[in-house]
Length: 156
Image 1 (spheres, rainbow, N blue to C red):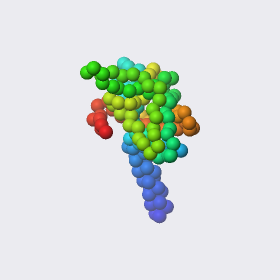
Image 2: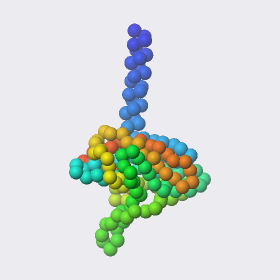
Image 3: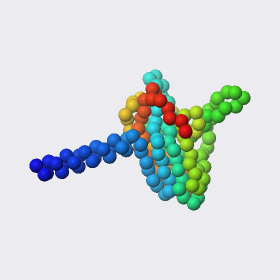
Image 4: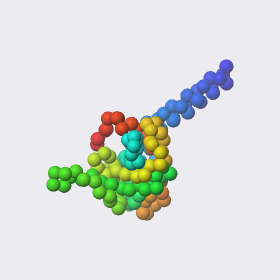
């Protein structure tokens, strides 16, 4: 009976860990932390989506995000929404500099990653691996859950 209880307890711990990871992921690599990340579920009939997260640099030096890649798409770009003359527009940016002890928030209607030419529809609950590319440090691989397009957005 003790062996069954230990196995059940271990399985319970593993399941709890997996749930916590899928709800809110955190990575830490070379003083960079990524939290609150997700990818939007793709809209039926489209091949684009977007990814959001909070990147925090805890180091003494600035880090520069210069791009991202994934097996789901051959093209991921850094984009920014901005208001100009009363019109919202979106444009590609080359990089995001995250200063020492600073945070960059990638969110709807702001900085974000645009994912183009998605090979297969992204469904709520999928877990997608993205590789973040930096100019002065090794790449960072993260996993982001896909969230429903009907999800209420949390704005910072």
